[in-house]
Image (spheres, rainbow, N blue to C red):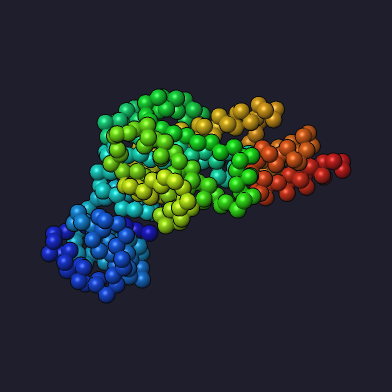
Length: 310
Ligand code: MG
């Protein structure tokens, strides 16, 4: 999917609004002046005078109006359009980890990096997420935690299983944790407010807010969503690292408790370790230390019974 952003004079904006008038859709945010939806392109006119073309036909449509200019974007990122100076703003970012792990807990973090802290975050070692591995993140997380206001929530599997059994989806669980982590950081920062809040998108805005509609306090003001958000503002990268290290620390704690090194993910090695846990402590116990509705449970059970028959 491609994105093209043009900055155009008022005259052209009026032409665009009239040209796409019969494809108009309701504008969803205050800073949006006009939106239209073609079969392969969404056109958004912002109050700032920028026009965003998104979709397979973006370049074709944008080509009718002018030359492209830079907006804050990461190749392939989906979600809200951010101003082109976004990386330099004061932003509260949030991200999570552990959703696909049988043993590891879902962990969500939010972290505030003010405009004058962006350079510091890079100096402390935050870099392209592809270059970050678990060991490296463990070494830089303590500095990030002491440099920036943050909140990190680790959902133990026992609690996860309880709410999952009540019918909560992972989407709902994540949305509630993101909202809570953001709320905690905003409270710590008060009276300072971020220029924007950026959530690494795991659900569409409407679905996210549906999940948390019954919460007492819902963080809505200035909230933006984008996938690949760790590349759009360093605060999300920091949140992602802080969440990951909390996840690893909980894995360490659990490994010590179980007396085995618990593997990450949900692959074959996970099934094997899970089977050993069944043989040693029983299935009930395994269910308590894992996301027990995962398919790994059944696989571990059959591995363990095969072992027993030997
Ligand atoms: Mg994420």
